[in-house]
Every structure is written in C-alpha cells, then in structure tokens.
Image: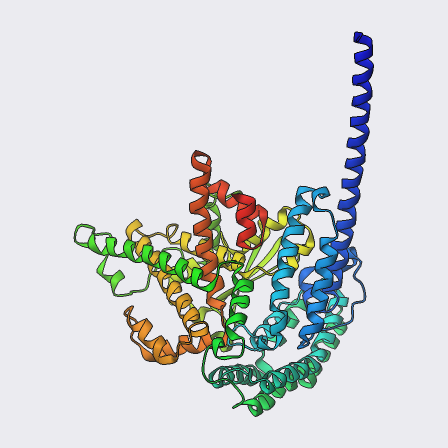
Length: 578
C-alpha cells in the first residue's frame, strides 16, 4: 500500500474521530445544560414555599427568577405517602440524566443530590416521629432569632418582614395541628421537654416592650434611606403586628400545648416507640451523614474514647516530671488569656490557618451578643449562614451566659468562626458551587467539621502543649460520653437509672446534671451524634488518607479536598477522596 494511500486512510480516520469527538462534546454540553436547568428549577421550587428561608438563602431572588413570592413560613406535613411519592418522582428525574456525560462538577452535584434524596426517602415513613419543638434548638427559640436578623436590603424587605410576622399565628396553629397528630399517635414530647418549651415561650412573652425584636427592627431600619415620617410609620406598623400577631402566637403555644400533656411516651428513648429502632437508625443516617450501622458507630465511638483516655493517662503519669501541667488545671480552674476580645481572637485564629488550611476568602465579621434575658434558653453561640449570593458579610452570636472563661470563648469562636463554620461556609461559597447544594443539610459534615476545628483550636490557644492536649482529649471524651448515652437511650432503651450508672462509671456523679443530660437527649435524639460522629468520621478519614496518600499527605491537602467537595455524606467523601 502506497504512503499516499495510507495517509488518506489515516486522514479519513482522524476526520471520523474528530466528528465523533464533536458529537460527544455536544451531547455532554447538552446534558450539562439540561441538568443545570433542572437544578435551577428544583432550587426555585424548594425555596418558593418558605419566604423566610428564601430571604436567608438569596439576597437577590429576582436574579434567580424568584419574584413576588407570597409570605410564608413553610408548613408541617404528616402525609408520609405523599411526601414519599414526591421524593421518588424527584429521584427518577435526577436519575434520568446520563451522569457519564456531565462535567466533573455536575457529577459531584448529581451524586450528592441523589444521596440526599435517597436518605430523605428512608425517613419518609416517619414524619410524625419528627419534633419541631425542642429545647434550645426548636422553632420557639430559633424563629425569634431568625426574625431579629432578617436583613433589610430595601423597603420591600421591610414590607415582606412585616407580612411574615402576620403569618406566625397561622404557622403556629398548623404546628399545633401537627403536635395533635403526634399526640394521637402516641409520639408527643416528654413532660420534661414540654416544660422546657413552655418556659421558653414564657420567657419570650415576659420581654414585652423590652423584646429584642423591637430594637433590632429599628436598627435595621437605619440601614435604609428612609424619611423620618416613613421610619416612624414602619415602627408603628411593627408595634401593631407584634401585639396583634407575634405575642398572641406564642400565647397560642403556651395555652394549647399543655392540653396534650400526658399523651407522651414517658418511657424515654425512641426504641420504645413502634418501629423506633428503625427510625433512630434512619435519623442517625440523616443527622450524621455516616452510613455505618448503630453498632458500628458505637464501636467507632468507643475506639476514639479509648485513644483519648490513653492520652489523658499518659499526661497524668508525666505530672511529677512535667511542671507545665498545673494542679489548677486538674481542679477545673477557669482560664484567663491576655486577649479576650472576640474580634481579636477571630483575627488571630484566621492567621493560624496558613500552615494547614487553604487561604480563606476576605469577608467581614460582626460579633453580636444574645440578649441577657434570653441567655438561658439559647445555645452558647451560633453562626448565621449568609446568603449564597452574598457571603461576604457574616454574623456570629455569642451567649455570654455560657462563657465561663476565656478558653471557652476561644474554642467556641474556633467552632463558629475559624477554622469552623464561618471559614467552611465562606470558603465553599467562594468556589461558586451550584446553589442547590445550599439546600442539602448534612449536619454531620458541618457540625463535625466545626467540632474538629474546635478540637484543633486547643493547640492554637496560649497554653502549654501538654495542657492543651489534656483539655482537648477531655473535651473529646465528654462528647463521646454524650454520643454513647444517645445510643444507649434511643437504641438500647436506657432509663434514667441506666444513664446515671453509665456516667458515674466515668466519674460524673452529680445526679441532677445527669438528669438534665438525659432529658436533653430524650428531647433531641441524635443531636449530639452529628457533632461527635461527624468529628470522628473526619479523624477516621484522615487516618485512611495518611495510609493511602503516604508521602503525598499533608494537612493542607486533606483539609482542602474536604472543603472543596463541600457538605456531603462520609461515604461520598471517601469515594471522592480515597
């Protein structure tokens, strides 16, 4: 065969190859566009049913085609069949896309969304097992805070805010209907939980004219260019809606919830309910993002606790030769640092990221304090997640009533700020992921990362290394005890006496304190697990990364891969990283 003939054949084959490549590229582009159009539609559909969530998710909804969304705080569904069918339809829609023709970024979104939907589907039969009213973290405590921080970007936001306040009575009425259905099914909250909820409602109502919603409303009005007459008109309208809707709505809860008392399951954990163990396993999967069984999670917890105990024992053994471990530490004395200003602490923590974490984006941070009257009924601190299209402005709330010393403040700011929630959220936002990822709640990832960050921060604090190690291991150990108690109460059926015996075996003997822990765990199952299991899953993932990557392993690489993948289940993180 002549060289010319061979050249012609090769030229033809190359042409065919290029045509095929172009067709494949076009199909890939087409599939990406179809998938992204679906994601956009799904994102808008999910947000359109709750204008409070919408406002917190997007600063400019019109840029996403969301305009004139009716004011709504969402709804409470108990129809498991309808909810399950809706999820199945969405799963079929997602699965209809050819994953192999999607870009790598869209493949990740595809995998995470499908994982999230399938996990939600497992929980569909258990809608009545859910409890929207829990001490500290329930609607009754979180809604006022969300309303107090509702941003005003323009006058329309003020109008929307006032309309939302008017929706609260109907929203609470629907909540009471849901609680009545729980009561009829025998799933109502425990008496101790109910007492806590009622106390929180009473605390809010007792604020009256001193309610922080009045002050924050006027402060937010100052950010707008309003005439004096308009500002006064808005203040008057706000006063009216507070008196006509907000306070009566909380009275509604306070007056009607006690009527359901006595219909609860006073036996404690979820395992005493019909199908309670199965529900708990499903709930733990959803809360932690870990695909391990409950016995496997217990094994993971015990292994980490044993490591912590051994480290503590080694430090205690070294005490006679190690003057850096003071007797004050062992007595539980509080710590005072030279720097106790929260903004300065955050700035210092941010500077410490450079060696082991990718550089954080440039954002602003505002520190706010929980009103003194609400300190007892709110968490020690919390980070307000900014809109996905405006992540540059961030707020951290500090509850001074839960800050006994400077070390607590330091580690709390690490949890909420750097390298915790604020850093993880703003870093991921800086990568411009698909907005739909912001709707997918992976508590094990986000709270696990924040707990992991908190543990690291002990070594950033101005403490001797041995002291930092002892305090960190002790903090980890206590969280492990809570995790085992959660499993014991809700999966193994521990009563209060069993829980007291368990904690006493670890030297915690105050029965009143143990009772409080028991009641918190009964009221909010799997809550502690998302912190501790998320944390231990990251540690386990790091062990495997060290083993697999060998000399290529570095702290910065490990952290960067986690942060760039974004919130997801630990099975998916392992699949992508290892």
